[in-house]
Length: 126
Image (cartoon, helix red, strand yellow):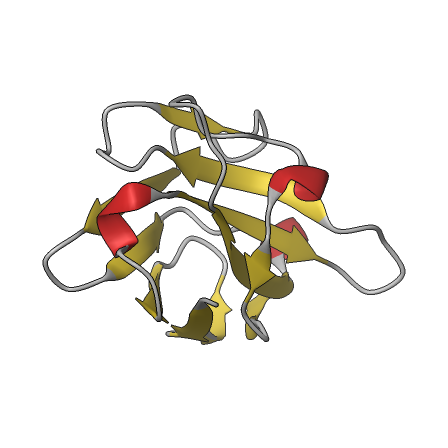
């Protein structure tokens, strides 16, 4: 079992920044990949970024590449999502997820993730 708790969401103006955190507990954090996903009202949940257990492999969705940065601190059992140059279309509930079966490359598929947090709301005003 893995428990995930997101924090750091809020209301920000377009062009601003936020840093999301996801604290994990229950299993050895450094042994599994992590991902961030988001879901806007009326839309399906979508991939944002993922990172391997070591941090050595990272993927981003095209819509956030160059603006968002995913990184992890295995000593703190935490994964982060630094979001810069935020746009109104980034407004969504953001979820972190754990993939306990990753072979090394972090997945971009929702189906591959075993555990999910409850999400944190990010609202970007224009």
